[in-house]
Amino acid sequence: MFDWLQKIGGSSHGLADIHRRFLEMLQDGRHIFDAASNALLGGTTPDVIRTDLYETDLRINHTEMTIRKELVVHGTVHGASTFPTLLVLMSLVKDAERIGDYAKNIFEIACSGADLGDEASKAFLIQMKDELSKFMVRASNCFDSQNEDDSRSLLKDIDAFQKKCDVHVGELVRSTGRNEAGRVLTVRYFKRTASHVGNIISSIVMPLDRLDYYPDKPMSEQ
Amino acid sequence: MTAATQQNSPSSSPASLLIRWLFVFGLLYGFLVAIQLMGGSIKALGKDSAETLFDGVSNPFAGLSVGILATVLVQSSSTTTSMIVSLVGAAKDVALPLTSAIPMILGANIGTTITNTIVSIGHVRQGPEFRRAFAAATVHDFYNLLCVAVMLPLEITTGFLQKSAVAMTGWFVSDSSASSFKSPVKAAVKQAFKLIQDGLEGAGLEGIPLSAVMLIIGVGLTFVCLILITKNMKILISGRMEQALNSALGKSGVAGIIVGAAFTFAVQSSSITTSLLVPMCAAGVLSLRNAFPIMLGANIGTTLTGVLASQASETSAGLTIALVHVTFNLLGVIVFFSVPAFRKIPIALAERLAGKAQKSPVWLIAYVGTVFICMPLAGYLLF
Image (cartoon, rainbow over all chains, first blue to last red; front, side, top):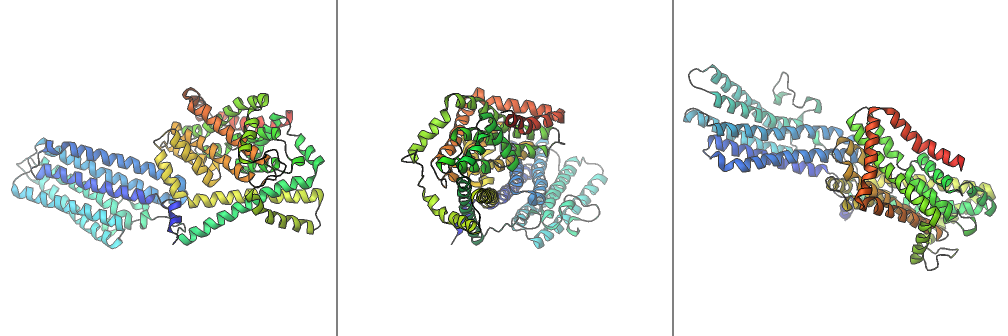
C-alpha cells in the first residue's frame, strides 16, 4: 500500500546496483574466457574474435572502476557500518577483473600457434575448459542467490579441478621429448582462473580476513 | 545478499518509512512553532530592551562577525538563518532591523563551511589524500568569502539585496509593508505557540523572564528539530542521494547544482551535503571541479530553510530576509559559476592552500584560526 514511499527515497541500497554490475562483470568474464579458449582449442581464428575480446576486457575494466567509485559513494552516504561489505566487494571485483586478464593470456597462447599435442591431449583441455566455463555460471548463480550450500559444493569442485591442474602440470614438466610449454601455460592459466572464481564464491562462506588466503587447507575445507 | 555482501538493514519497510515521514512532518511543525516562539520572545522582551540588544549588531562588520561566530558555534547555518528570520519577522516595533540582519545572514554562509573543513582534517595524516580533501573543503570557504567580499560592500553602498528582496516580497505578499503577515502556516502553528505561551504565563512568568524562557525553548527546539529532520531525511532519501551522487560524479555544471540544491533542501543542511563530498574528493573519485557545482547547489538549497521559517513569522520582513539569502546565493552562482574566469578563482585558491597545508600543518591551523575565530572575533570586538 505504501510502496510509493520506498520509491521516493530511491532504492534503499545502491548495493543492489553494484551487485547487478558485478554479475554483468562475471558474465563478461565467462564470455571472454569462452572466446579465448575457443580460439585456442575450438579452431576459431584469433583475428575473428580479437576486437570483441579486447572490447569485453575493456568493459570489464571499466565496470571494475565504476564499482569502485560506487563503493566509495555508498560508504560515504551510508557510513561505517557498510565498510566490511565494501572491503569484500573491493576485493571481489579484482578477482573478476583477473578472469579477463587470464582470458587474454589464453588468447595470446592461441595467437602464438602453440603446439597443444595430439587429439587426446586437446580433448582433455577442452573438457577442462568446459568444466571451468560451467564453474563460472555456477559462481554467478551462487553469488546472486548467496546460497551457502551451493557455494560449498562449487568450492569443492574447484578444489578438485585445481588438483587436477597441478597433477597434469607435474606430468608435463616431468615428460621428455615434446615442447609442452603451450599445454603447461594453458593448464596453469585454467588453474588461476578457477582460483579467482573460487575467491569470489569464498566470500559467501568465509570471513573477510580469510579471503584469498588458504595457507593449509583447500578452499572448500576452510 | 547475505554473508560478506550482506546489506545493512535500516528499517525500510513501507510501514516504518511512513512512520518516519510522519515524524519528519511533526518535526517540521515543531520547527515552525520554535520560529514563532523566538519571534514571540522578542515581543515579550519589549521595544526598549530589543533595541538595546540589537544595537550591538548595527554595524555591518559586527553583524557579519556575529553571523560567522553563531554558525561556527552551532555548526548549522540553517539554525542561524532560522533564528535571524524569526528575529526579523517578529512584531514590527521589536524586530531586528533588516539592514542589521543582512550581514548576519552573509556571515552564516561563511560560518557553515567550518563543518566540512573539520571533516577534511580527518585525512590530515594521508598526504595527497588530505590535500584533495582540504581543497574540497576550502573551495566552499573561498567561494563564500569571495561572494561576501564582493557583495557586502555593494550592499552597504547601494542596498541592492534589500531593495530586490523587498520588491520580491511584494510579489508574494499583497502588502509587503503590512505589520501583520497572513500565512496559512502561521495560523496552523499559532495554537501550539499559544499553548506554550499560556502555559509559561500560567506558571507566573512575564516580561524578561518570560522572554528568556521562550527564547531558550525556541532556540533549543529549532536546533533539535533541524538535527532530527536532517538525520531522518538522510535515512529516508539515502538511496536517492546515492543514485544522484553516482550520476553527478562525472558531470560538472548545472546537473551538480541541481543535485546539491535538491539534496540540501531535502536534508535541510548544506553541511551534510558538502561534508559528503570531502571523502569522495579525498579518495579521488570526485574531482574538485565536479564537486564545486554541487557545493554551489548546497548554498542555494539551504536558503529554503529560511523561506520555510519565514512562513511562521509575524511580519513579511521574515520572508524578505529569507529572500535576501536566496538572492545572495543565486547571484553568487551567477557571478562565480557562469563566468569561467571567476569560477577558477576559488578552485585555484583552494588548491594552492591545500598544497601548502599538505606540506605544513601550520597553514591549516593559521587558516582555520584566522577565518573562523580571529577574524570574526576581531570584527565583533572592533566594530
